[in-house]
Image (cartoon, rainbow, N blue to C red; front, top):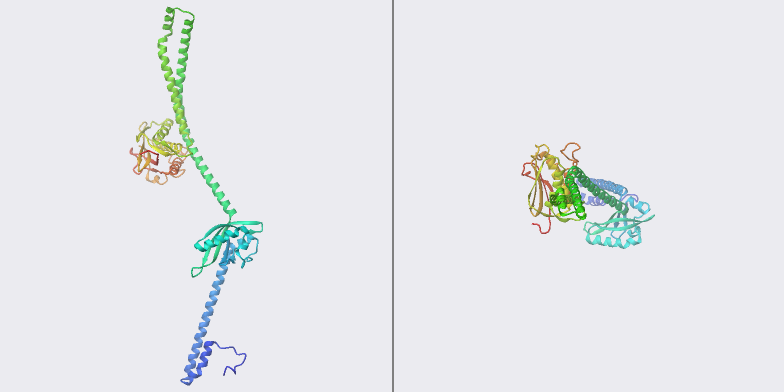
Length: 464
């Protein structure tokens, strides 16, 4: 049947099939017709099978595309941050549901519109600069811009990231932004939490210092009572001497003769009292100076030490702190100072005093099980590896291997309930860290055979 004589309603043949049929008669004239038709039908079957396979793959890809579109749609609907996808020319391709909430426009209303129309006029220039920078650097750019909202501008911290095609050219941009109100609130809460943490830490330091001072009250009272009692006793002697001198000078003013004055002088023993008077004055002065020194030590001991770091003598600071702990302790513990006689370091003197007091107090507590008078503590100061180092060792039982991992943990203590807070070493460790040093257990323990703790500080100017 020729093409001209074919019925009008007959569908056109597949080009491949039509070509086979068109050449079939010619092929049949030169050979076996059945073989030719068999080849034609085989070719038709193969072509049909290819078409079916192609159709199945196409449907599978359509399903995958629909799944991907559904997946992307769920992301755009659920993401809380504003998300905007634009073309290279600035036309909006996709927006998240959060953009509709911020702008007051229904979902999809921005598709096909220019990006600049979504933002207030003051953000246009910033947006242009951000898009240009992202295109030039091929890296994300962060700006601040405000979406136009129903109740006024909605400021965002906006990140602009370029989208690249298969040839690494910029095909568009992805903009993600979070409302600045939420960010500023989060930053405000973080700053407030940080301030509360610092305040709590400072309070812990003060509480630990007060606890240490409370243990020293007995020693302070004893130290002050001795010189004050000495001064008080000398004032009574001075009062008695003053009475005798007044009696003698009254007789002189009354015109007594020389013989009578000599007799009175012997009766009042004025020669001896004059010598005692000088001793009483010197004793009263020594007692007053002792009280002055105690008050000065207390003033230095209770210094807040939270200001700027200063250069001070670590050995003298440790000596004052250790002496006060020793005064408040009922145990007969000997404290010896070895190494450098003076060591200039840089830090907050009040806080370092607190660290030394904690270390010495812990050493005294560790020696409580020893025989009376056998406890010994050694405080050693020296320069190691360009740092001022102070170590406090004792001849107690030491620290077992099981305790070394938790020794600096807050609230960890080996003392009986109520005998310790478990914060002394933890706070001391933190204080030394803030000074750029490290508080640690001595690797080989104390030279006396017990536990040893050491810390290091920056040397002061001129220290060697």
